[in-house]
Structures are given as C-alpha cells and as structure tokens.
Length: 207
Image (cartoon, rainbow, N blue to C red; front, side):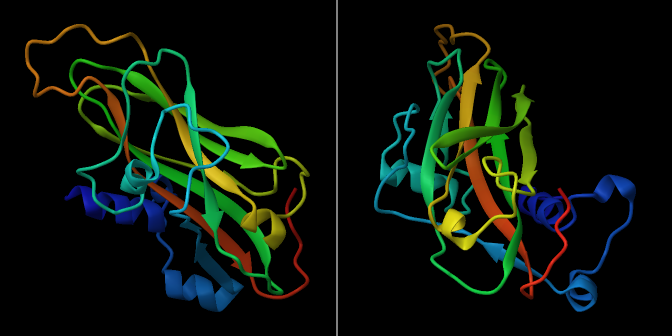
C-alpha cells in the first residue's frame, strides 16, 4: 500500500485497531458531524520558531508533498515551531475537537522524538511524545476535545487565534558521515490540523 493511501486511511479511520469501519456519509447522516480543515497563513510564523524555519520552509509541512518537510538537525532537547491557524469563521456551530496529525520520517543513522504542539491563551500545550526511529514513516495523531486552557468547548474566537505546530529533538548529535546521501536529521513531512463541529447551538460536551 502506498504511503498516501496509508495516510488517507489513518485520517479517515483513526480507530482501525478496533476493526470497525464506519462509513463517513453514514456518520454525517446519523450524528450531523461536520469535519473542518484549518488552513495555515503564509504571512509569517507564530510565537515559537526554535527550529529556525522561514515561511517558505514551513509551507513544506502542508504542501501534501512527502518529499519535503522541516528538519531537526542539531537539537538534543525539544525545539518547537508554531504557526497561526487561519479559518476566520464565526457561526452557530460548536467546535467539538481540534486534532493535529504529524507524518515524520527518520533514517538509519539518526533517531529522535516528535510532539504535537498547540498554543492558545498565551500557553503552549503538548500532545503525544513519540519515537522516530529507523527509516520508517511515523504517523501520529493527538486530539484536544476541549480547549486545554479553559477546559471548556472550543470557541471560534479561540480557533481564529490558535497556533499549531510541533517539536522535535534528536537522541544524540549526528556523527560525521562519509555518505552525504544519508540525511543527518529527522523530518516532519506533513501536518494536518482538523476540527469537528456538531451543528446546532445546543450540544452536550463530554468533559
């Protein structure tokens, strides 16, 4: 199975371990869930830029091209980079959750770790911490079902001021390699930021 098909299956069916696949159309009809994609601004980076990205390099994580990405090359402690989310919508839907999915690659000479990051109300929050070892692509998703600052359902004002991103670190600094074809880094290839909304002004949120 191609990498893109694996990604599509993961994003659509994150609970595949249970073996129960629910048709998306059926879900829409039964519970009225609307899936929303949050887009990134191209005008600048967010509050954190510890990986020293520029706006052009940052665009590599949402260009849907797994040949490009953002690298971590010289950090053995977590370094964070965030970027504003642009959705700019105010409506009667409650935001049920916000998810960040990362696709990260390693290689045969460098191991490391990655995390999802979310910046809201002046605070930085961490999703999963997961290992990136070997040459495999690692796909990892974390969902915030409420705003972590307020412990309340997300509001559109919070979405429109949200920053999302990731952190990476290496287990050890790379040694000098004679093979210049081997990348001396781990790399975030792609990032997806998605939300779910339930139509209507009344909804019983699970805390």
